[in-house]
Image 1 (cartoon, rainbow, N blue to C red):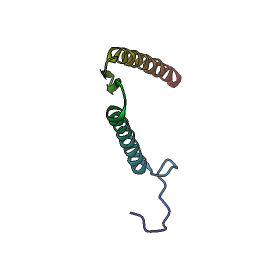
Image 2 (spheres, rainbow, N blue to C red):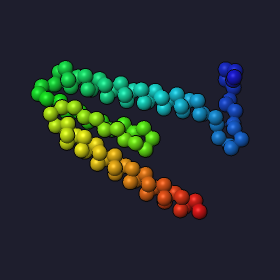
Image 3 (cartoon, one colour):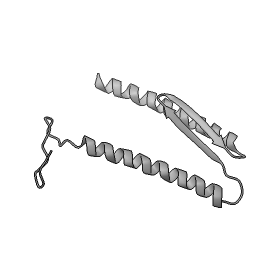
Image 4 (cartoon, rainbow, N blue to C red):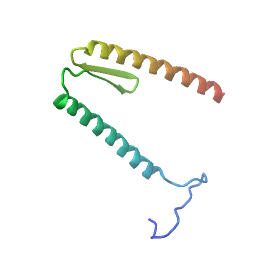
Length: 103
């Protein structure tokens, strides 16, 4: 541990060891985004007039899980599937380009 006022230690690669702080900020960011989405969904359901449509894509590894609710959920799910397929295609293209650049 560092004493108060002591400079951070450099790691062997010339950079500072910030992995713990970065990971903590990353987790806090994800939690804030998740909480914001839930608040917006609850507010739309409770205070919104008319019907509410909802669609979501959850990636677990390479497998997309697409869910939807509301009167036009079919269109939301279709749109989610199209986005999932496009992101998988982009991932494959980018990984091929990176592997060619590394050779």
